[in-house]
Length: 58
Image 1 (spheres, rainbow, N blue to C red):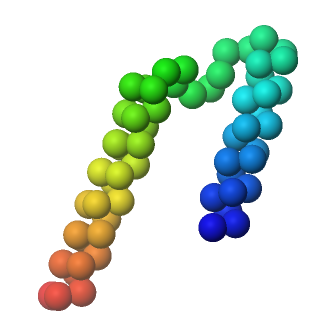
Image 2 (image 1 turned 180 degrees about the horizontal axis):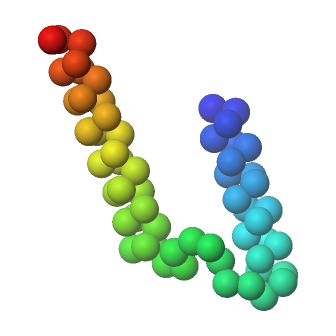
Image 3 (image 1 turned 60 degrees about the vertical axis):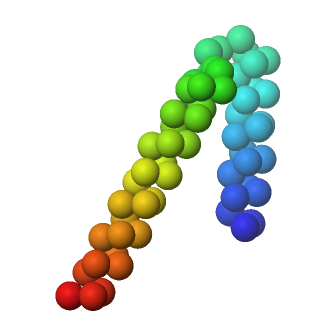
C-alpha cells in the first residue's frame, strides 16, 4: 500500500510541476482516456491470473 501512496504522491507532484511549467501532461487528459489505461491494466492482470492458475493445474 505504501508503494501505491508514494506513486500517487509522485504523480500528483509531477502533475503540479507540468502545470506550472505549462507543459502537456504525459497522460490522457480526460476520464475516458484514463479509463482506457485502467482497462488495459485490468485486462493484463486478468490474463496473467488465469495463465498462472492454469499452469499450476498442469
